Amino acid sequence: MSILITNIKQLLQVHDTNVTIVKGSDMKDLSILENAYVYIEHDTIIEFGTMDEYSTIEAETIIDATGKIVLPSWCDSHTHIVYAGDRTSEFVDRINGLSYAEIANNGGGILNSAKVLQDTSEDDLYAQSIKRLNELIAMGTGAIEIKTGYGLTLEAELKMLRVIKRIKQESLAKITPTLLAAHAIPAEFQSKKQDYITYITEELIPKAAELRITNYIDVFCEEGYFDIEDTEAILEAGKKYNLKPKIHVNQFNILGGVALGVKYNALSVDHLEELGDNDIEALKGSDTMPVALPGCSYFLSIPYTPARKLIDAGLPLAIATDYNPGSAPSGNMNFIVAAACVKLKMTPEEAINAATINGAYAMGVSNMYGSITRGKKANLIITKPMNHYSEIPYAFAHNPVEQVIINGQLLE
Image (cartoon, rainbow, N blue to C red; front, top):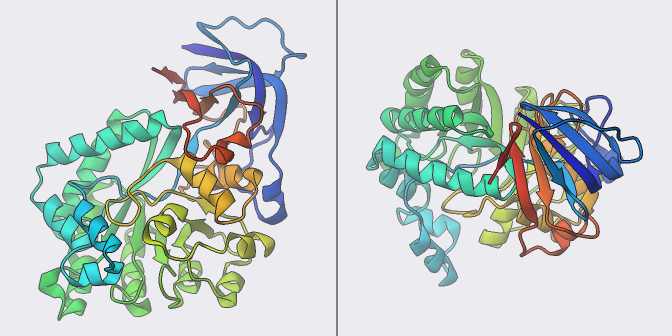
């Protein structure tokens, strides 16, 4: 299979040599070719350039992209899309004045989702989840991380991992599975949290590792969930099985989770709605990617990650959806790019870098995804006609995507 896209108004995130991360002031730069073409064979980007440089290339499919933008597909590095049911009733409760913490204390929140998932068959869970994923692909997402965490029992967490594995095998999108057994404390362990941590470290992690589905482990490091000592014990257990950390930190409180993530060489630290100077200092010189989740801030009406502080300190930043039923029930990365500009005060160039190359880095796949580079995987968005790529975040409630190419295949 070969695809040739010609007459591209703007071809974004173009690099002659492979780039795997963009930091600080460099995030304001977005490499662009005007009036360009790109040629794909099988699942790989083979060639690109300006139409002035173009000489005839034979291809099975030729797409005239006159007036359209072409860019790498979105790389969503933080989602929980494998879940059952929804939490619409909690949405109404929050409108009526209950806080996220109050809903959780009343038996809602993560524990609510866990109970529903435990009672859902594996086939049903797969059917609900793959439907969500296909909707996201149609909106331009070509690489996505999927966490467990709505199981909270050995059997249910393993069920989630098997569903993620099935999705990975059957979808063209790049899937990165993550084990998030430490997402909440089940009701039966509320008065004996240490027993649940022992359950995670001595039973759940070893059994999950036997499946050889994930290379990553996550912990919700937050007051009322898992503190610094808990988090370190879980990361140590994961380390024995070569599971690299991706940690939920600083969503509501600063506990020291950022520095702990850096200590354990976490691939990413995610949320960061609350951020201190010590957190920024800890990230400097590290290989850990900060990840902002503006959809969660929007839905819960909590502070937004101070993106400017991170970028102006010379750090990289990725943005992701946090797609989940309780605090961010949308996986639309086009909206996330817009929210990054409107609420995080990022430029369109910074937001696109954060949603492509840096998002791929936060998934551990930026060597093959996230930019238009010869030899990288052919995951591309072709937009509807527009004058400039800044219209993607500007028209925040509109879908800019006309066509998507995933793994070298043009999807209808």
